[in-house]
Image 1 (cartoon, rainbow, N blue to C red):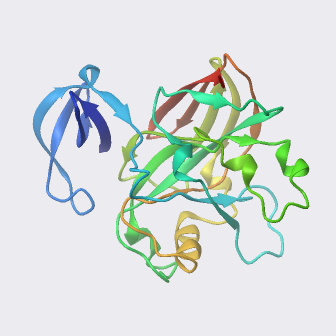
Image 2 (cartoon, rainbow, N blue to C red):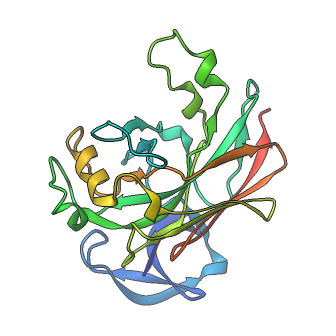
Length: 251
């Protein structure tokens, strides 16, 4: 099932995508949602990020691919609310940017309030999954050394595209992940290569902060690459779909 947040007319709504139709949600969005009556066609709506940045947070995971080391868990950082954009919205290349990179990730969508959740129970708190592009300004990782715990390189506005919707009933630990730049595949990986599993990530983050309904945890990326003004970036996750965003210059 694909759960979408969308703009239709002058109202923001939640619905279920069924082929080329958008249907109403019967029941609780974060409980047992079911498709209701058909409201409109998919072509009539504007898809939005499946997270309300005014209500929800994005605690993102760092360094969850590659060789396992002595760490007891991954790094956590926050994407500020202004980073969040939806399908089709432009990624704005910062005026001070020198090397901006894409990071294709599986986003874990929380469906129940979670605090100090065990690994054994963690998947019970997952509503579904979505595509995330954790855009970053790589050069600032070195230029900001000595300025405290600066995360400037992750926090530019538009640096967290999410979408196109939430897919349920998937195995988040076994999803193909691709990034395409200008229709060319530049990353081809799988969440099966994550160091820490979905359940471990949810448990780990819930020990630090309370996770609320609708929060999204980007789970880390298998590889990165550079993007430039004029590019079109697509994040493709198996079983979910494609998140597509153009890259534009700041003005």
